[in-house]
Structures are given as C-alpha cells and as structure tokens.
Amino acid sequence: MTPSHPIIWTRRAGDWQVDRELFSDRDRSLVIRVPCLELRAVPVSPPAPFDRAIITSGKALTFARQHQDLWQRLQQVPIWTFGQSTYQEGLSLQLDMQLVTGANNGAELQAKLLTQWADSQKAPTLFLGAATPAYPLVEKMQAAGFNVNAVALYHTEAGLYGSSGDPLTAVEQESLWPKLSGVVCFASPSAVEG
Image 1 (tube, rainbow, N blue to C red):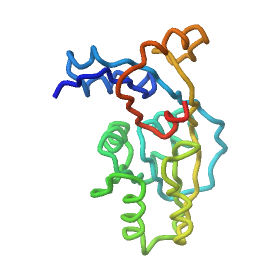
Image 2: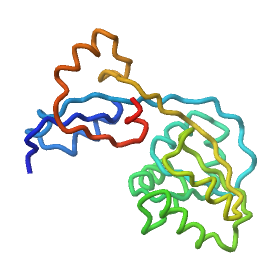
Image 3: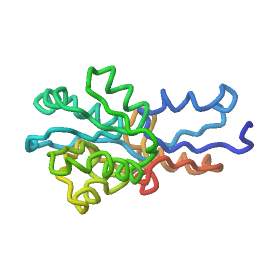
C-alpha cells in the first residue's frame, strides 16, 4: 500500500541506512527526514563485577565497544537480549548471546527473566543501555529481589537535526516548517520531546 501523504520520519540521521529499507523506492520519495534526536556517549565508571549482562539494543553494543575494560568483561559472560537484530549483532561480535524468545519489549523480557532466573536471582547482573531506558527493567528486577545494576552508555538529545546529525540552525528550522505536512512517525519517546 502506497502512502497518500508525506511521511515525516523522526528517527536519528544515523539510522537512515537501515530505515530506508522499510520503504519502496517510490515511497521513499514521500519521506521527509526530520531527525528529532541524536545519541551521545556518557562517561562510564568501571562497573562492579558481574556474572551476566542484559543488552537490549545494538546501540548499546556500539557504545559498549568504546570501553575496553567493559568490552573485555562482556566477552566473558552470557548476555541476554530479546531482539533478533541485537542477538545477531552480538553473535557477529563473538559474544555469548542468549535470545529470550517470546519477548518483544522490556516488560515481556522482565517477565521471562524472572522465571528463567528464579534460581539465580542473586547473581550479579549488569544492564547496559541508555541513560533513560524506555522501560524501567532494572528497577523492576531489583524490586523482585534480583541483583541487577545499570550502566548508562549513552543518552538521547532531543532536538532538530540535519541528515549529518548536526543540530539545525534557526534559519534551517524556519525553512523546514512550511514543508512539514504529513503523517509523523515517532519511533522513540525521546523523539517526541524533540
């Protein structure tokens, strides 16, 4: 089905190479790219020792690789995830990835891990991801008695960005407004803030 209105695509500029495959060549001409967020690395302190990890996005894998000590430790422990693409990316990086099947979001991952890890809830576990995750997995697991700690690797900056990932100037923003008529697609709560 071909869209009848322009599609205003708000995902970050760096995601477009993958995102563009969601559209046919014809539909791609209807896409107006208006990135409303960008990812920025945050300083990371060495985490306490951990026996397993949870990583729910390829972006977390990318940022984890920037920290040599952390990355070396991740290569020595099993890592749980629920996304097929994150799972495959981790495998391609020679990580011991554990795919939690039947989970499609943080809440479902939590429910599955509470069951799978019932006999090992005290095992030190590290969650790696965004400074503000989409779902409070760590807090929920801790409330259930699990020994899970978070390491924020990146944060999202809401705003208007160009295709290069640089913030738009006031003049660029003003010239953009008349073009923005269509269906807005937000793929992240952070993009709505932008």
